Each structure stands twice: as C-alpha cells, then as structure tokens.
Length: 261
Image 1 (cartoon, one colour):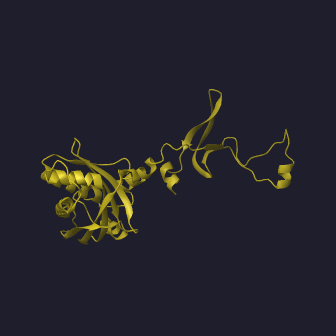
Image 2: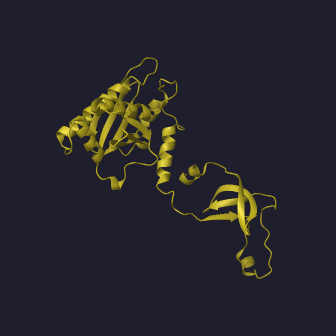
C-alpha cells in the first residue's frame, strides 16, 4: 500500500468516525482540482523519525467547507476560523492514525499537520485522490511530495512488506495518467515512414516525373509510425478497403512515456 493510499485511507476513516457516514477513497482518473474548481486550501504534512521530508495536501475549498459542515453537524456554513479549525483537527487525527502504518524495524514516525500558504516549488504532484460517502459528500485531494520524503519512503516498508514509494509505484502512474487525461481528445497527425534518403540540393532540383529515389530501407523492413520526429511504433504496411494502413508489430516503449519525454 502506498503512502498516498495509507494517508488518504486514514482521512476517510476519521471522516467516517466524525460524520457517522461510511467514506471510501479511490485514485482519481484525472486531477479533481483545476482552475474551474475555484479556490483551494493547502496543508503541510511534516514527517519526522523513520520518515523525513514534507508532503503538501491541496483540497478544493468548496469540498472542505462541506466537510466542515458535516463534522460540526451544520446544514451549511462559511469557511471561517471554526470551519478551518475543524478541518485541521480532522487532518491531524488522520495523521495520528496513519503514523502506525509506517514502520521499519519498529522505528517510530511523527506526522505533523499545519496550514500552508502555498505548495513548495520543489515538490512533485504524486497522486490525485477522491474520497466520497456514496451520496453527496466528496473530498478531492492532491498530494505533493518533496524529494527527501520520496527517498525516505523508498527505504520504509509498508505492513504488506513493500516499499512505500518507488519510481514504478502505482501513484506515479496515476499522476502520469492524470496529466495525459487533460489532452486525450487532442487530435494528432501521424505519418507512416517507409524510409528516407538524403539528397543534395542539386539532386533535388533534377527531380522530375519518372525519377526514382532509392530509400535506405529494404522491402521487408518494418514501416515506422511517426508522431512529429519521434518513432512511436513499427509494423507492416497493409491495404484496408483500398487505403494504406499499418499493422503494428512493435512499440519500442509505452507511448504515454514517449509523449512525456
């Protein structure tokens, strides 16, 4: 279980206790916070002991306001000092609950929560999460971890016996998918490249109808599928309903990874 899942699960456990309504958390398919979400509130989680470093928690203000109303058993309220204090205490209770989940040979972990004006520039967005109560209650969350905490988590073992963070952790893939989801409907121009050849300007000027240009590729060599100047796949040229097509036989590396390089 990852750091993000442990801490967010602790939040939902505390919310369940405070609101008497069962809450659950899941990894969000895309960032639940954007400019359209309006104002947000940020909290800093300081890790000491077996874990060292910082984590920032960002919530939409509208979600926190509703959470505060539920904790204080109010129909509605403004996000004033009383509401902010209720949310801060909820996060501190979640931090206390999560502390027991981080272990390494019995060493202790201390998690301290405080308000923050902004997310530090040195951290990395690691996981968009969404907690819900199965009805109208929801709490979106973005976790940001600094490099010190990431390295510390790599040395810390979860109750399941796995590192709490690695470069291939699911939470990292979530972040990648979250970023990609923002542009999934953008249309891209793809090109099939059967081969290439460098010609001098003199030879180019001599081209006319009937000229033959020999390419640098054999007939049975794979055709390349290009996105801009990047080869994203290779395959065999085929004819489909009278039109050229490509039967993909090789993808050098995950396409999402290639797009982000």
